[in-house]
Length: 200
Length: 213
Image (cartoon, rainbow over all chains, first blue to last red; front, side, top):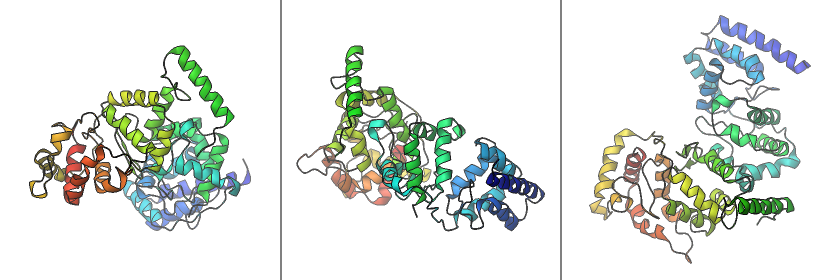
């Protein structure tokens, strides 16, 4: 395990221990999240930004962690424990809190791939049966309801997430993302992740 | 527009040859990747049973739709009669044989409506659908779309159509449909109707048809 991974593991261990001990205090619950997701909730290493994420999406993800249906390695390692003792009321309050924070772009993608990523996002690749992301995720990648905001998320997170759909993770979320992401080439994944990382 | 790459040309040629051999494709051959891959592509947005999907933009139900309507709309995107950048790109990658096969596939699907419209609007919508709005000279929707809202020919099925989609279409009718003056089409019939309905009436009739099976 690399140094960042070790640090995450230690933090997550602390987080889940604290969460188990105190499901009642809202301010403490927020701090449990920001240990890993960054003091401004704008993401930190593999933990994605929560700031400005869609309320319904956050609630759904917390429910999926709780039910252990979101199943990629980091989810198993960190979020299953973090969400294990999360009551419905606390989950709702956390989702409301983080969705109201202002998002900020990670800006960590490859600038040379932005044009390619934008073309896929806005227009799709009809001849390759790749749909345009904009239809569901919105013109500014802002998301809606249970469909997540993608704009400004970190390149590394977006890239891994897209790769994982193709690898069979997150299948419980249902169609259409496993099918769509499975059609993307590695370069197209990098291009999309780059483009999205710069969206404000 | 887009330059055809040698690889794509090669794939298209191969597809045309294999379609000719198998007899499965039309004159222009099967789409690259085959018809099933293209159906899956449509369903990525329109839903696994083509029941429609509430994305950032409402994506219409295609299930049970009239084949002539679907074929006419796909041509309308290409001919700039109907403005929609996404569907313009999508339709350009479809040949006539593929369009016919897709329309036939979707015609035969019959999933339940996705619902979600305000139930309290349904009664008012039913009245408009069946009786029209005499004061505004709006004919009964049922007169053309049929008593079960199943449509006919180039007149679309509305039964089970998404509530926000029907609203969007009626509100934007004059800006989305019949946009090519050189090619007037059947959308002209709806223009006065869409224009004469109030937003509240549009909401009501959209709610009513969205629950029809």
